[in-house]
Amino acid sequence: MIQSVRGTKDILPDDIHLWNFVEGVFKKISSSYGYSELRTPIFEKTEVFVRSIGEETDIVNKEMYSFLDRSNESITLRPEGTAPLVRAVIQNSLIQQSNLLRLWYYGPFFRYERPQKGRQRQFHQYGAECIGSEYPESDAEIISLACDILKGIGIKNFKVLINSLGNNESRDKYREELIAYLSNHLSELSEDSRRRFEKNPLRVLDSKDEKDIELTNSAPSILDFLDKESIEHFEGVKNILTKLDIDFTVHPKLVRGLDYYNHTVFEFQSSELGAQDSIGGGGRYNQLFTEFGAKQTPAVGFAFGVERLIIILEKIIEKDKLVQKPDIFIVSGLNPDDDYYLSLVKKLRNLNLKVITDLNRRSFKAQMKESNRVGAKFALLLGEDEKNSNNITLKRLEDGFQQTISFGSIENFIFDNK
Ligand code: AMP
Image (cartoon, rainbow, N blue to C red; front, side):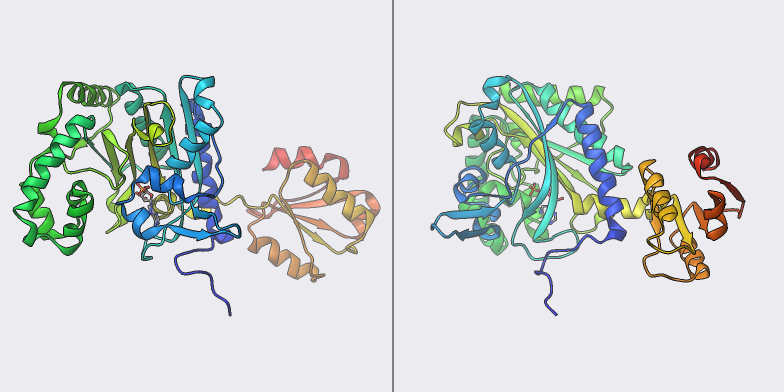
């Protein structure tokens, strides 16, 4: 048997209700904040990601699905959503049409990572980007939107960690100081962190290695290097979050993996997830537009990993509650091409009812059993008697209440007895 590719998963009918539910929440809450959906292609020119995410990041270095197409162009399956969205905004001159864009996206993403619980090679992200405001209220709006989505899904137990990387000057000053500190401890760092130190020293702060964590706990804090502008911005964000009753923790070691962040960075964590406890995160990226050769445009955004939202949702919801059971199962003794039978099925479906029929020519008794198995609200019993009198018999399966009614009064009966 040919199996699916390692790190990919089928979403089966039994689970699709969970997915439909979270997708509904994404749409509803994004729209209540005035965000519009933007869909980009699943693949882009490789350059889109190399330029934006940064050559020295794990994503670009180790995780991209890149290939040469038939005309020798390097193409990459998108590993994240911000860079393609920014590419689309610039290419379609969206920012010229409106000086503030509120956008969201949802779909599959691809990273060649070691698969484990909550980590796949094809996974899904929902993300939102607020483009065109440099002010802290836009950072706060994005964080508030993210929190409302988690609450809309029913997730209450989550942590919001925030930090500031400051503007470029503050970040550069800190970077030098951190390099100085780490160079005195190089031999004590893990191999991974030594590599990171060479290429992207801030990422040493991200290390999950215990010894690294201990060492970086005594490293200089970025918060001591923020200049006046950076402090004002960060204070502005925290002030609004406090007033919105959003519980957050300042975590000075939070830097996030991507190169393009400055000022606010944040992450959402859930203890329900185990080792991969990050539900998602994001930050401000005022320089990204210039990497694409466009005018400098301030922006802030975040992304959630949807598989991880689903893992949490499964723990807090009874899956059955999300399943829309059939309204009617037709238990028929008539021929499958009988006019009365077919016109009845058509009529019921036109009423927007969920109607199931037998396709295996099973006995009346077997059909009755099936109507219970699928959890239908009503069994509609149909035989020669009903056909000849232009009637049907409806049986409410919950309590066995049964009545024979005329073909014309089906609609009223169903809605009165649901
Ligand atoms: P990032 O784009 O790396 O900031 O990731 C944002 C979120 O996407 C993470 O917090 C995860 O929830 C999710 N995510 C990232 N990579 C994967 C993956 N390989 N499999 C499943 N979820 C992922």
